[in-house]
Amino acid sequence: MSLPSEDPLAAALQALPAPRVPAALAGTVEAEALDAFREAHAARARPSAWRLLAVAAVVFLYGGWALSAAGGVYR
Amino acid sequence: MFVTGRPWGTSSPAMDDDRALVEELQRGSAGAFRRFHRAYGPRSFAYLLRLTKDVAEAEDAFQETWLRCARAVGGLSVDTPLRPYVLAVARSAFIDGRRRQRRVPFPAGDELPEPTDPAPPLDALLADRQALAALEEALNSLDVGARELLHATAIEGLSAREVADLLGISPEAARKRLERARGDLARALARRSRP
Figure: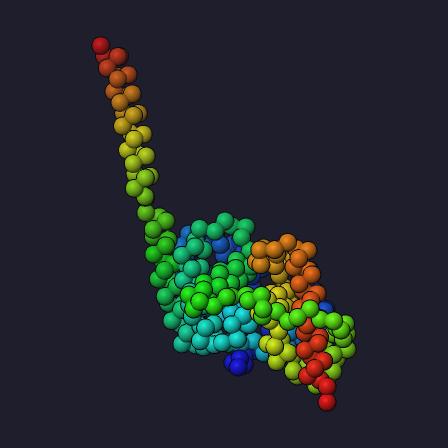
């Protein structure tokens, strides 16, 4: 459905002058967005409390199993 | 009303290489984010200006759009096409902004009444220099839904599926709305070209 580039309407609309983002706004928005992007990336990279809890649970269960198995060997 | 810039050009190189850009964004590359913003920022602003017809409102929605993109873009899957994604975020920021102002984003009453006369042939009107000069004005006289649809298809070149996803309607409904919008634009142009 997108208008083919040879469509006269598409060609006419594409020939309209494109609005320009005011320079001050573009700069401010880019700086703010970049900060938010960095924060979001850091938050994604940071292990969540649930993930830490899951790792602790695995270590505890596996550790308990390993210790009990070792106890069986040495008994 | 619009600040005059260069005419609409072809897509920027970043648009042809969305996958690589998304991969870099997933890794948290600040340079990739700047490229992303510079490739899609002007387009999102133009789209918002087309929706709002108001520079201050478009600027607020633009700021909100890019904060939302910044928070979410690192979590996108690599096969996400960025152009429809950014337009969808901009549309959502526009709708939320209108709701905060207690305004209906796409008022039903804003639509022109169902036309009874057949639309004049658009091709002939577009060949008329006088009518062509009034194209921007004619486009801005249409309801917000028609302006959005013509912008998304003719200027952004979104596919049927992408437009349907953007508007939350079926491709068939989008096709019908586009036909209606073209007819409305033809009538608006014809009114302006009459001596």
